[in-house]
Length: 507
Image (tube, rainbow, N blue to C red; front, side):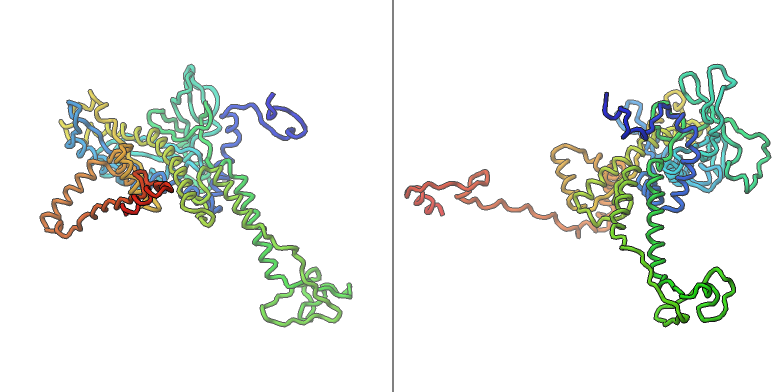
């Protein structure tokens, strides 16, 4: 047997039931969501973890759609169609068109989706096939919080071979076919509702619903909040900090205790000698720099708080590192504490973080962006896209529905070193210029070089190119040293006079 599988007195309290992913979630999902949201509201580390996930995954511009429509011969891009599709997509991504409420742009929807994953573990997007606002495309998005997918709706289905599991109807292959949504948010009961519906559930077909989450186990039907492994750590950290600062406050405000020699006089007078209103307590309020008098027979005893907590910073730092490891980002990113890191260690942690963000970006593109784009393309082909430019979208959809999704890129702490590294990578043919442009700036190669060419033309017309500084001259080759060989190693002279004379003659 494995030692980890043995049962003895050291492992008797190691509880590990043999349950499926959904069985584990069945009684835990609501509590995990509620406690995760409480952390985001009150815990600074949880709030920073959610914020940094949104900023690094989505960024200031969001995940950009770049059409890749090719000409019929398949050799070059069809710039005319690509420009038209980009314009139509950008117009639909406005808040008035893509959101059923008219409040959130497509970029804001991306941010809300990514922000829901750490605290809720999942989020739903309903595809509403009708025009909204000024849009001519019959498609809009409705964000559904995870609480509205009824966790308790489990059992047999009215469809043969189907069954319900935590609000999701599955077929015999485990493929979602319908979703049971609560008509109103279960936590919104105290505010009432203005909906006229009397039924409790709203059933949505899977073709009209996007369920976004990252499964941890095979067969997992619902998403787990990303804060689940660190909820206990965050709670303990918060309670430890609360106890530490409460001790500091009491220590700073308590001058001491008063002991009287007359037990019958206990609580009979106020601190100024006047009779007490209540016989069970005596309060003495002091101010800094003031002298206070005691009653006859009373003695002031200074409080004993014990030794100071000299391990406070270490404990907080270790718990914060534990939080960062459980959530999936570096300690520096979570705490903004770079006091114990140098350039190399910070760069290494940042690179690992960026790989994690790229995984989330890839998941989001596959589950959300591509699905929404394909739905928008079919809806826009009916009304909005100029025809007959896209007349073959129905017969050749693969020509149009494979855009490139450009996620956000990151700059570097030391750009001078990185630029030299990129230049060497191109010289060694390890990377192309197009790959580096997309990786460093997030822009399209053709768009970048076209813009640069247009800028150069404008500068030439305005006479600005004449003031451009000349490139730095090439460094002159070093003067050869007769005592240094071609490999840069010193020549070992023999001790005989002939070699010594020859060396002196050669300088």
